[in-house]
Length: 243
Image (tube, rainbow, N blue to C red):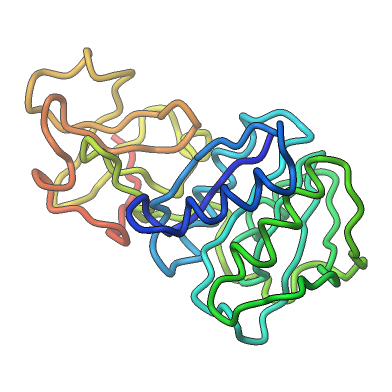
């Protein structure tokens, strides 16, 4: 399968244009929209989101991942192979957490170029054809390179910030729940929140944190909106305290 992970949004032509290329180049390969609203222009926060969600898709899933504010610049176009999955997109830090957490990994530069390569839409013209060819077993010109050119080693293994707000106003962090003690409190939006198992364990209107279905700490308000009720947004910081 091919998974789409972008900050393009669903409005406008961009996702449809990429899907058209995938259908043309790899007919019969399922294309699944994972995120179309990853943090806009933000490869850093998107990296934590991508790493958390990628593991649920079995190898040899191919991720067409494009959060690329530097499109047309000097950043490399790459394929990262990590524990049997392939990630196609820009070398701007988007794959840093995927690469870092993998037990088997390698990075390949995309040497192939299409006849037409726009300066502003590499998702359609370069990354989509490469993802399609890899997913369907076709050949494509790649060459091995060392690591990630834009690998930001200073990024923490877990990010204590909000990285995504979902449709319900729940605020997802870049921090894995397994990285904090079971009884930890989350301090955010001027509140100290206890951990609960799920929404039904909270009273209506109560704020809490829980381990979401992909292992991340998520802040929620039962039958409310954490973003509105706690004043949260992408980038809001949090602290962990005990007791």
